[in-house]
Image (cartoon, rainbow, N blue to C red; front, side, top):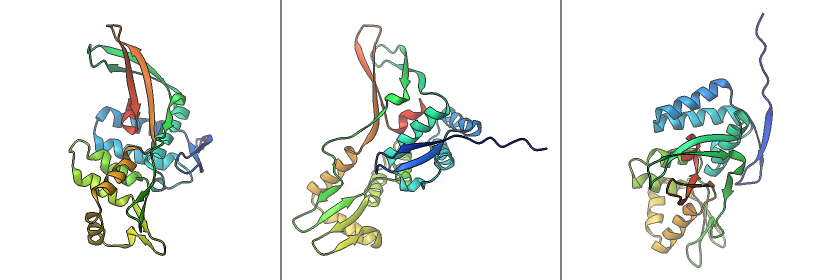
Length: 234
């Protein structure tokens, strides 16, 4: 006689990037262990692998690389909330007093923050417009894993991957159809003002963000900011 297989409840969420519905399930005990081991290791590569493994298991009808980075952040919090509970208790060190401060976070309070200045349409000149696309999970891995080394080429590679198409009045150029050398030459021909607008695209992308107010032992009002997947492992 075999033990029965336990069916897990299925949930739906709306993707922030597209408004599409996506189905997901909660962590199993096995996946909870994967996340805990990653958290305790503080190893970037292990954290990345655990995120990818758990998301691939729990997201039921969407390829991981079809999701924008902030979709991934959003779904991680949704899955965490359905798997354990909405409340996360944790401690932070106040930067002024160095005291340990106990805080509490309700996952349902976390929102995707959108910047009114954000646009994925970059005007190159009077003839051409560059359309950007959001970093996917593979691009996210590059930026996440390179934070400790501050490798500028990692960010350049992500910028290239997020350039979708160059459009004129009568022609569409898909950048993925050109060689790396041709794309490099195109980028080198851009003015610094265009590069600045591309940088603004990344800086103003929607992101997961929440502020928690507290008072330190000196009675000063302080704010702890939870932002992006980096903070997921609190």
